[in-house]
Length: 326
Image 1 (cartoon, rainbow, N blue to C red):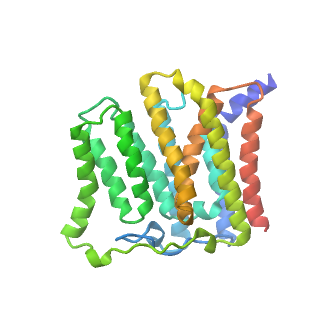
Image 2: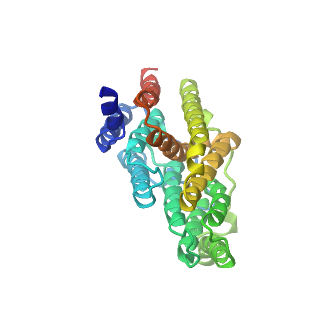
Image 3: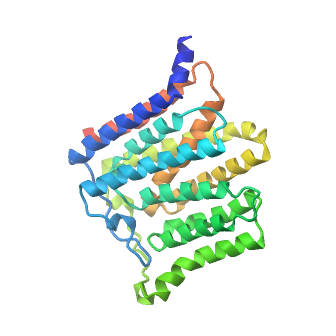
C-alpha cells in the first residue's frame, strides 16, 4: 500500500511542480550567490549567437529560467495533445528540473542551448500535427524556416535539419509538396537577410572552435561530464527497454516515438562529435532524456519503481550540491 502511494506521488503533477519550484529556488541561490559562469564568445554565422542578445545580470538569468519553463510547457503540450507517453504522468517535470539544476550555469543564463531546447520541441509539435496530412505544407515550411533562421545564429540548429527531413517520411508526408515547402523554408531567411541588406557576404564568419572546457573550471568539467554520462546511460537503457512496448503501438504512436528516437540519437551523436560545442546540446539532451525515461517508468510501474526515480533525481541534486561546495 505504501509503495503504491509513492508510485502515484512521483507521477503526480504536485511532485513535478514541487521539484520544479525547489530547483528554481536552488538556481536563484546559485546565481545570486555569485557561483555562476556565463558562456562567452559569439558563435553566430551571420547574426550574433543567443548568449550575446541580452546583457549579463538579472535579465539574462530571467530569460534562461523562462527558457526552461517554456521547454516544460512544450513537453506538457506534446503529451496532452499527442499522448506521447501513453500514460497519465507528470514525472517529466521533476526529471527535467533536476537535470537542468545539475548544470546550473546552463540553466541560469540565456544562450544557444536554451534556445535550441525551445525551438526543436516547437518544431516537433508542428511535425506531429502533419501526420498523414499532406496538405499541411505551412507547418512544414515553418519548421524549416525556424531551423534555417536560427542556424544564422549558431550552426547547431542545422544539425537537426536532416532529422526533420526524415520526420517527414515518418509522418507519411514525404512528397514533392512537402519537400518544396521544406526547401522554401530553408531558403527564405537567408533570402530576406541578404536581400534586404541586413547582412552581406563579408558578415559571414565561421566561429572559432572554442572548447567549453576552457570556459569552466576543471572541477566543473568533471561534474559536467558525469552529468552527461549519467543522462546518456540512463536514456539509452530506457530506450532499449521501451522498444518492446513501442513495437506494439499503433502506426501513429510508432511514428511519434520514431521521431523522438532519431532526435535523441542525433543529439547524443552531436555531443560526442561536436564536443567543443556540447553546451549547446545539453538542454535538448535533457528534453529527450526526460521523455524517454518518463516513458519507461510510466509504462513500467513496478511495486518499487519509485526507488530508481528518486535515485536519479538524487544523483542530479548531488551533482548540483558538489558545484556549490567545491
